Length: 343
Image (cartoon, rainbow, N blue to C red; front, top):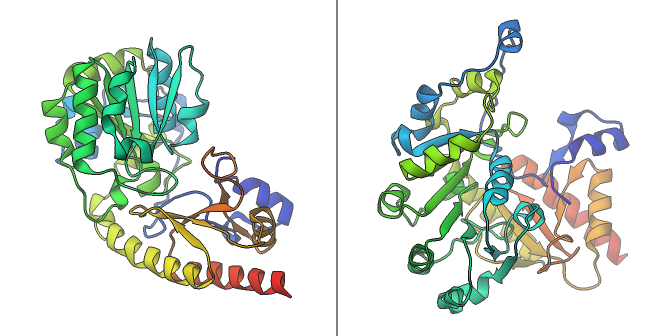
């Protein structure tokens, strides 16, 4: 199931939310969350609908405001966009489960990442209206090769199909491989989605934005509901500071390496080449992911089992990367589980 079900654990363990270490949802742990005062005027009036100043801020000088649309979370847009399409779609897998489970009247062609890497031309054999790629992917954090990415975009372009790049976790990547601004200027079939809920750790506010050709943005905004972004969220945007996340990729990489090093010592297997703020590992031997999950939840620690992914099962575990002292708590508790299991 989806990560972040912290309220159930809080209720079951009778503990406050701030006493739980949630490794099941991939939020940025290296940033301070600002408080916001909810004024009555934010509630009794409709939210703003002229969002140019917010678009300019969120672009962070990377894109023009005509190339951006603000959406109430990327998950919302994924469902909305897929439902608007009228032919088969290709989903490069693994991906977010939202792509797999979204309601759709046409065929969803699932092609594994490994197959695409070996033979990107395979997609020429299909009839489709859009391709969906998570970059870096979920749950392994892999970044697809730049040359392969552009080959896929070219194939989609020649088929007059959209190419959707889900960059929910791109802000955590230390060495970016592509220039998204150049892509949208050269390919009018490319749509890029970014989540701000992850990097600024504000999932409760639901905030993301879409980047694309100006004509695509105009079309997108025509079928989005008015007042989709609450005034509370808009006011919070004004508090965001992109300078605060400059150091996040480096901090993430340091702690990610620490976690990997210690988990490998415990005979876990690392899956993929993670470059985001999460890792996927595999339990080996006679261990069981459900037992580990229950053990950690009793210690007020949440993890994400990948039992709802076709390529994985309950012995594959995705872990968020957090601050060092929290990661040490996680590692120590996993060690205790392994020791107790062997006794």
